[in-house]
Length: 150
Image (cartoon, rainbow, N blue to C red; front, side, top):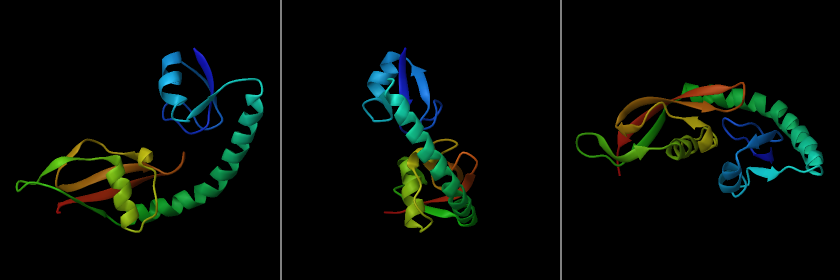
């Protein structure tokens, strides 16, 4: 087991500044190469304190921003134009990145694609809902209108 300090939030594992123990392969092949974590050391304890202090300061300011953005996202449906056949079946599927790009194009602000949760694979035109975790305490439901185009 490898002991690591998280530098970014990792779903199902922890937030930035948390000290976690994970299997060696997960640490070596996923967390460390992508920069999501640092190896733990006694000197790293100082980094943990600074990361946690920065996180607390960001969370306080970002909670209010997240609530405002959640209200804006829930109020207006987002139109997603994708390639589709004559029967309405899509060429491919709608992914989290597509939703994040459509939200930004609609002028509703930037969201991280990793925070978008699609309930199922979207493979045909129609209306759908997606959840967005903007903050630990704030989530928004986005109405997606998937239409054929291009």
